[in-house]
Amino acid sequence: MDADLQAIAPRHHEAANAFARWIAEHYQPGEPLHAVVVCTGNSRRSILGSSMGNLAAAFYGMPEIRFHSGGTEPSAFNPRTVSALEAAGFGVEPTGAEKAPGNPEYRVSWGDGFEVLEFSKLYSDPVNPQEGFAALMVCNEADAGCPIVQGASARIPMPFDDPKEFDDQPYEAEKYTERRDEIGRVMLSVMKLAQELIARASAR
Image (cartoon, rainbow, N blue to C red; front, top):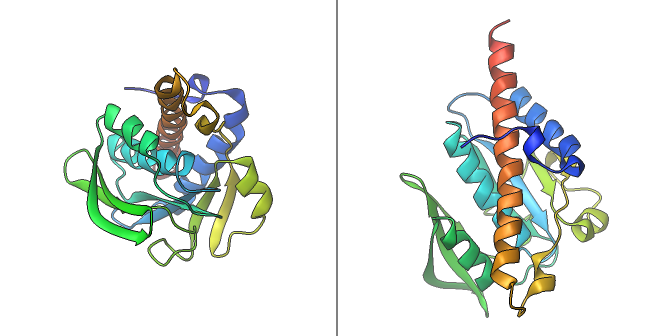
C-alpha cells in the first residue's frame, strides 16, 4: 500500500499538505495527537474520515495520531457507512447502547487491537478532545456553518462530495465505496508526507 499527493485530487493537495505539516510540527512519539473530522450530520463522511484516518495512521506506524468524528447537527451512524467500512475490513459491531433514540453506538475496530466507540455526536461532545486538535472540515456545509471550531489548534477545510445523494439508487454501494477510498487515499497521503517531514526534521 502506498500513496502520495499525486494519488489524490488536486483540490485536496493544499489541505493534505497543511494537515501533514501540522502533524509533523506537533508529533511526539508515544504522545497522543488528535484530529476531529467534522461534517454536518456525523453520519457518513466524518465517520469514513475518522476511520480511514485511524487506519492510515496505524499503517504508517503512528497510532498516536488518533482520529475522532463529530458533526454540527448530529443524526446517526448511517447503515450505508457501516457497510462501506465492513467491506474494507473494519469490524463494526453495535454495542447495544443508544446515545439518543435512533442513534446507536458501534465498536469500530481495525488492525491488531485498535478500536474506538463511534456514534453520531456534536464535534464538541465530551468524548472528543477539547483542545489542541486539528479540525478537518469534510463538508462545505459544516465548513461554512462553523467558521470557528472551539479548542482547535488548526482548522483545515477538506471537502468531499456527499454519498448521500446516491442513497436508494442501484449504485449506492459503489458510490459509498468510491467516497471511502477517496478519503482513504487522502489520509494515506497525509501520513506518508507527515512521516517524511518528521524524518527530515530529525535528520537535521
